[in-house]
Every structure is written in C-alpha cells, then in structure tokens.
Amino acid sequence: MQTKHILVVDDEEPLRFALREFLTNAGFEVECAEELEEAQALLSNRHFDAVVVDLKLTPIQGAEGLQVITFIRERALPTRIVVLTAADNPAIMREALRLGVDAFMQKPARLALLAKTIRQVTGETP
Amino acid sequence: MSAIETLLKPGTLNVVFQPILELDDMRRPWGAEALTRGPHGTHFESAPVLFDYVRFKHEEVRVDRRCIDTAIARAAQMQVPRLSVNVHSATIERDTTFAAFLEASCRAHLFDPRKLIVELVEQSAYWSRTRLIGALEGIRSIGASIALDDVGLGHSNFGMILDVRADVLKVDRYFVDGCAIDPQRRAVLRAIAAVANEAGSAVIAEGIEREEDLATVREAGIHIGQGYLLGCPSTHLDFTEVDRKEEAACSERRF
Image 1 (cartoon, each protein chain N blue to C red):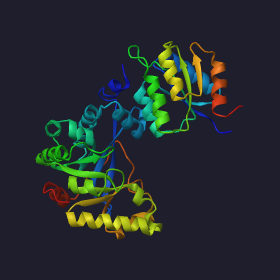
Image 2: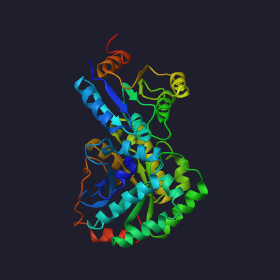
Image 3: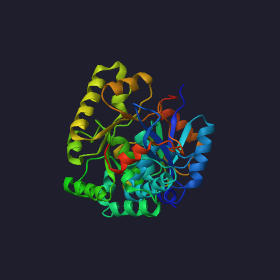
Image 4: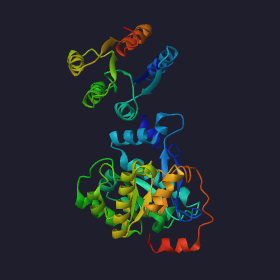
C-alpha cells in the first residue's frame, strides 16, 4: 500500500517534533506546518491524505485551525481532517464539526490512537 | 519568531541564476533569470510553496525587495548581460516606492539598471489597471525593462499583453513542452511570436528540455530560450564571453 502523506499543523514546536517522529516511525510520510499560511501553501502545492490540525494556532486568537479546515473544504481537497486540540470553546468545536471533520481528538491524545485514527480515516484500515 | 521573519533574515533566501540563451548562437548568453529558493532542507526550498506562503501572508513587498536586492548584488559580480527578476503584481501595485528601491539597489551594487528586467508574475488579477500602468512607467523611467511571465496561462493573457506593453514576453513551458509533436502547441508559439513581433517585444520560450522542442521553438520564430536543456539554475554563471555588440545592444534597450 502506498505510504500516506500527512500534514501536521500545530503551533507547538515540541508537539510537531514528537508527532513527526512518531508518525514517521509508524510508516507515514510527514510534513509539519507551524501556522495557517504555511499549511495553506503546502496544501496548495502537495497532496496530503490527511491533515492533523490543532484549532488553536496562536496563543491570542485561537481558531485559525478552522481556516485550515475551511481551506480544504472550499477547494474540495481529498484530504481527511483529524482535529487534535486542547481547545474547549464549545462554539469553536461546533463550528469545526459543522465545517466537516473526519475525526476529533482531545489533547493529550495517545499517539497510538492517533495513528490508528489516521489509518481509519484514510481508508488504510477499516 | 514566525517563518516569514526567519526568511527575511539576511542570507536565508538563496538566489540561483538560470541562463537565458540566444537560440541561433547558443554560445551567446542573452541574460539570466534570478530564481529564489527558501532554506535548504525546509519545504520553503520549493519555490511554489515559498511564494504561496508569502502571498498568503501578504508579504510580497518585503520578500520581493529582499530577493531582488540579493539578486542584483550577486549579478553585479557576474557581468550578466541582462538580469531578469520576478516581482509579484501585488508588489508593483502596493509598493509605491518600488522604482526608487530598484534604482537605489542598482546604485548600491554598481549594477546598470538598463540591464534589469522586471518580470511580472501574475498569480492574481491586478486591482487597478491605472495604478499598474503608472507603476510600470516608474520602473521604465529608471531604465529597466518589463517582462510578462507565463504568457498564455492564467492572468498573463492577451488583455495583460495589451495593458503591460511588455518589452519581453515569456512563453510558459506549458506551450513549449512537447511542441515538437503537437501542431496546436506549435500554432500557439507562432501566434505569440507574431504578436511579439508586431509589438516590438522580445519573446522567450521557457522550459526547453528536449532537442526536438528546441528546434520547433526556433522554427516558430522564437529566438531566445531557457530551460534545463540550455542550462540549469546555478549559484554562479560565467558571462565573461559576452559579445561586446551584445552589451551595446543592451545599453540601447533594444531587444
């Protein structure tokens, strides 16, 4: 089976590092973006099977992840969306679900469960 | 520190030069295009990712200035007959002192602005035709020329050709790649060559990668080209064999 290409979008550098290392070891090809515009540029130029995105990409504003989801949906990209967030604002979470996500996980999440979820949403496992 | 601030640090963006050659005498360089790449080993090493990021950040002006100044500084050391630099249309429109910046950069690096070609990269429609034309006049007033990139695709259409009145039309690789075996691509090349000829513009075929396409481009009436077959982008090009007549022609701004 072809290696799945995953984009991790999170503003926390240690978490990006950990996710890249874990998911790469789990057999995925991983790229990371720190901010909204970096994610948009990568999504514009490369195919990703799934994006793992935090909803809060800056300490102040806090809902930029929704724009990543909107970007994918507006362009009808075939990229599956896994939200991995510590955000607890019900309105933001409702909006994410309204835009359409394939899986929703709360931080801290077990990495093995994240890998399993990515495999499921990308159709690698049932 | 955000990625954009890191990219704007001196020495972070890399400039490479791709030769542009006269196709009737391929020993003779016509000029070079400066191409910017992000830091090695990052996804910004890919120019489309880098410049989409810059566009999404609305930082075209600062990044274009950094890239151009670096390119001019490097080109001044290479005796390049013509230097083509890419500029977003957003920069042309928003940066009201862009022509003055170009002039100052050329002066600072002892580079003749008449050798400078500002290549308009059209990733989005411009906002104001009047403002664009005014800005282009400013660039021409310092002695530089205007090129229209990716002619035939996207916003670089016949409307843009008329609005910009470019000194140089650069035909997108889409029409060049495979032109030897595609009569319709050949027809497009001939049409653009005819338009350029009527307008007194030079025309450059981009993306020449096969001998048979090179021959076809020449048959279509296009006599300047660039592409991997003619020369790969490099950190340094040797232009010391430039014909003196070529330099004279450049100084008269005739293409």
